[in-house]
Amino acid sequence: MNLISLALVFLLEQVRPLPQANPVHSLFESYSNDLEKRFNAGERSQGMLAWLLATVPAFVVVALVYFLLDSASVVMALILNVVILYFLMGFRKLSLGFNEILEALRADDLTAARQALSSWRNQPVDELEGAEVAKVAIEEGLLGVHRHIFGVTFWFILLPGPAGAVLYGLSALLSEKWGARGGEEHLEFGAFSRKAFEILDWIPSRLTAMTFAIVGNFEDAIYCWRTQSNSWGDMAQGIILASGAGALGVRLGEALHQDGAVSFRPELGLGDEPGVSHMANAIALVWRSLMVWACLIGLITLVFWFD
Image (cartoon, rainbow, N blue to C red; front, side):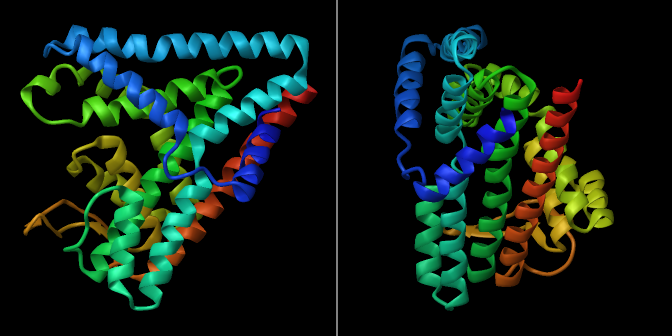
């Protein structure tokens, strides 16, 4: 049923992509804002309690509802899977945003490409040059596919029903919202959400990186993973980006023009500066990766059916 659920979600997204303002995301964001106001006094223990209140009730409720529906009707359980995964994944929204940037760069319209990237990331990018727009788009695309597709899929397959996918998705949002914020009052409060997501993402991030290596330039991907990922601030992101850059034969990271200055970042990957051809190759890399995961899930399903 897992493979059928995922296939139906992808089909549903092709017909009706998620809106830019995900209503479920917005609802949870409002709830997490309320928890932060109530609990954030700059202590790590308060961040842990807030994280538990944000994730555990949703995990338990989804798990109970799934088991009740599954005992009553397999079709109802399937519908629950599809609905929850639809709001968690958003692959079509990712691909539409990426393709809009790609088409603008193909047309040599840097202004339109910047506007599309800014809308996609919800951040101003008016100072980025053409190669930098392509670079950031590839980085965001690789990380977005991992976060919204492969990470969610791993936990959906590992735990019964969609409860694991919900736990991963909510943890990712909290890590981004609480764990990535600066300032002394947020550092300790967000520490538990960072660590919790780091644990949940440890295996999925490495599976994603390995998949990129398998379907791309394996030798360069593994080399970049081993030698460059440690230099990136976030280890999981560094592994995914280094492997993806090596698989594509492109250089990611490095300098960006933003906020009136040049931001220097570690170099990831090997080869040329990113451009339109590398963006097209990134799309092909992602599709090949999806096919690998679909085959693996299909094989796992067959093993359970004939066990």
